[in-house]
Image (cartoon, rainbow, N blue to C red; front, side, top):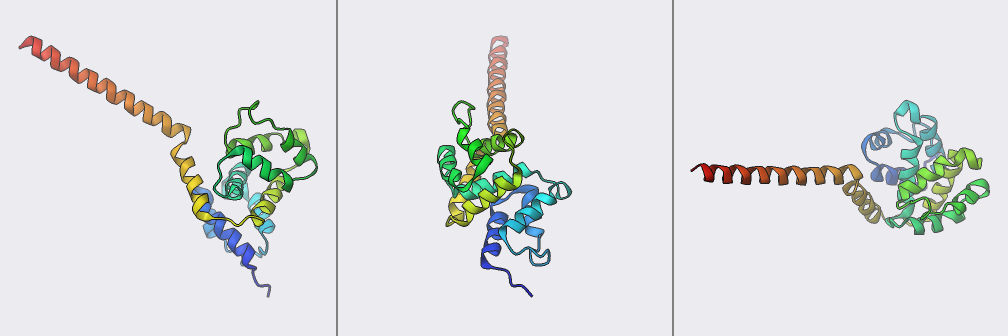
Length: 190
């Protein structure tokens, strides 16, 4: 009987705690000991191999890992600088060549999407990216309070939520103008 290391248990717990939605449900339901998962790499490989079956994308998983690796720092420039030493070969070349301002990359999720988008052109695969992210996470003393702060900030600033907020303000303004118009019209009639 192989005993689970604290590292893989902590890694699984941190992923579970940082995840949301369907990916969180999946992570919460995985019994890593039952699945014979004894390392962080095995957990990510299991998730990647079963992504289609479990109903999430490699992009969602990579973004979750990147947010965990960022350890609460949302600055994409810092993330790129700190992440690059964990990469090698074609992945490192690709990451080092990404010009954040030229490509208008302003967030860590956008950076990860750009890296995944270039994987075929630069000749590396998802496991290279995931492995480098795991290495960065393992070398970082993860502060889940900070990580949760960045995750909450992301959920509060989703582009859709801003649009909905603006639409609601717009409709409230139109309704207010309509009420003023009716009120003035009614005063004129009296």
